[in-house]
Length: 319
Ligand code: DGY
Figure 1 (tube, rainbow, N blue to C red):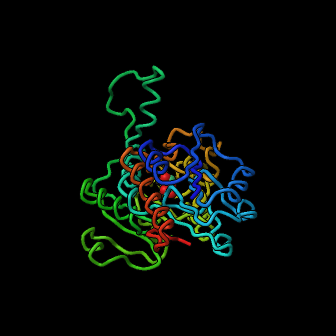
Figure 2: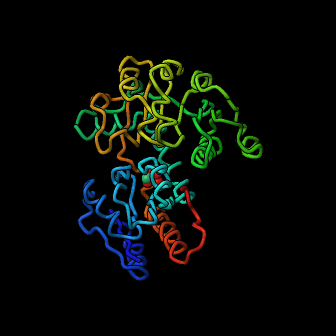
Figure 3: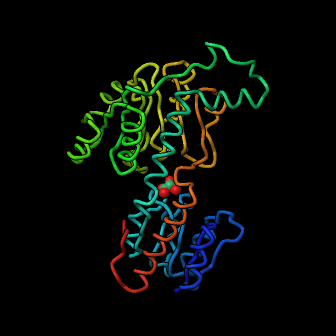
């Protein structure tokens, strides 16, 4: 079976793939062009893309040889599932193994925004720090504050556990339905069936919904206006979920005290309006970036390819 890996993966996973399949790696780690992706769909049996590859209908237009798209990542909004299904191409992802790493980054952003860590580091490195004083870079405490989660999937629950058990925050969440009662009881979590009601009740809001058409611009200008004055917004989900112009405006006016972002609508571009603001922490999509997690993601993709090669049900099939 011919397998194409579109970006560099951890060395041991690349080796494992090469040991088992006729694998073409991407030594340069340069993203493939749309034309190269489309060509690959005609040349390989398995394509292993990441969030940085756009697998849309045009990319699958030829699509006459690839039978499995084994995505390296849990999110798959960069893959047109309807077209894949129509063409009989199976799609798998890597759920579960990046939950803790991503929840850690949500908490990193929350604490950095609350405690103005980015501002402080910039000040120090630029030689502007004049020494300790009682009114210097005073931020917000988090204990006893309400963390409002938008979506209550695996990563949201892991972030809520950290916030509740580690930092004494109160937990509230919005979702299509209440979560597992045992989880709700453990976290003493309050369910909000209405998004704007959750936003109005939260001191910190953290986004945990999948990307794609259904959630595009979910947090728009009206939603941001519904947030508590002086509150904070954290996004480790997908950039398309959030109106960044409206966010920049709310941060600039002081309606929001701060924000922490790990994802953007057109990565690696970062919305210009945010770059000049002190009260936003901007990370380059680091949610799953631990050595342990990146290996586990690769091994999960490999397990899906092996199941496919054996003609067995795919463990993480999404289409
Ligand atoms: C994912 O898995 O969807 C992340 O965003 C990329 O690591």
